[in-house]
Length: 361
Image (tube, rainbow, N blue to C red):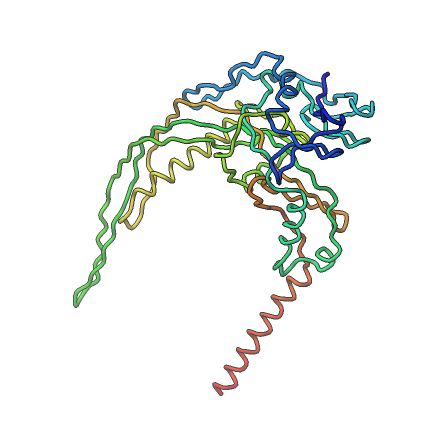
């Protein structure tokens, strides 16, 4: 299978995408190139016919014609710089040689129906991601002191994560049961009056670029938490932006993502229509009829920093939006601090209670 490396025309060194300057630079001779100057390198990826990668949907049916042919679990390649054997899993689209650290782009994983439509290039640098993780620790009262002081980042990697971006229109007819309760009283009695209403709402909504993680490797909860991305900065895909980073091709198809994306669309639609109803004591949904039309989806690669750190033989993983810098992750808890604080609160409350009793006597 074919490997791609972006080699400097001046010295033959590896060219990588620099997120801070948004330019392409040779790490050996410091030559700088524009995307246009590197466009000829991308022709290899266009050698395969590129089918239309958008699909129309009717009645919640997202389909794809993308080529998701069966691959072996492991692929083997030869590094063009040092000749070493590079072993990757079946979804890897960009990586680096473990021997010479040269950036490698695996062309077949980005060709034909596997070629992304759009990409958001990295904007956050590696050093910024590392500092953000240290800042993330600040103010965490129950974080173990040993973790904060002795913590070292075990692994940090910039990865382009595959996503499906969904556009569609929604038509909805909804009914609700509502009540309006009033109270009054006279000299003898208290009165309660409950008026009941049937509310009907009908209308349409348009959705653009609803994201759905297309990699089975990534935790959906993490990917949802680092949203949103600024999709105004989406650009046409060019493999040059992958140089120096990791990248995976999708292994979760449009069809497999259908239940999740439909759930998000339905929840947002129901919430939007519910917000139009006010002035009632109580409102409960009754019937719903929601239909999707004019649906299409684009295949995108979005930038994510993955950071791993280890504490007491347990690995803690953090994910950062490589465009906006939003960081999420879980942290260990010092149980002694946790329970000590509550014991202190309980002791303080007991002392106050005793003081009140003493003063009352």
